[in-house]
Amino acid sequence: MKKSNPPDKVKAMDTPEGHQRFIQSQWQDFAAFAWDRYCSKGRGAVVIDLRRGEKAGSGFHVPAYYVADESESLAEQGGWPNEEVAESVREYDPAEEVVFIFLRLDGDVFYYNVSDDPLPPIASGSKQSQRRFEL
Image (cartoon, rainbow, N blue to C red):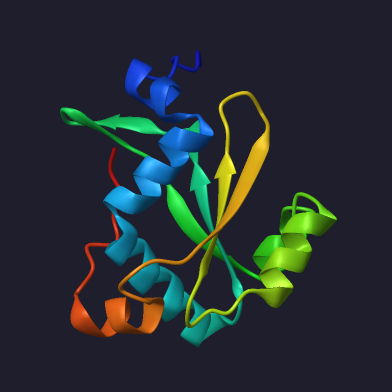
């Protein structure tokens, strides 16, 4: 089966600036999602998988999922992409930050530690997040 090329919208946002805009546009949902997963699975990172994006109606759905440190899922993936990411996951403050890992279209991996308002516990408590992340 032939893999289709990603839409121009995904290609255009696959830059550090585009990643930041994507995070900011859905910060409250991401922060709530990360806090909820931290509370149930422990510290970890939100993975944004641009490589597996797919057309969804008139938009585009980009898979986002949480990977907990020392989890079976992380082991199946061969661990964190590098020691810098592993250290970031070990040291971030889940009540104030979210670690994001972007699986880029070119095969590279970028990561970010992001903090914004509302903080993750407040975002989780103040909104029933839709938990589906769209471009």
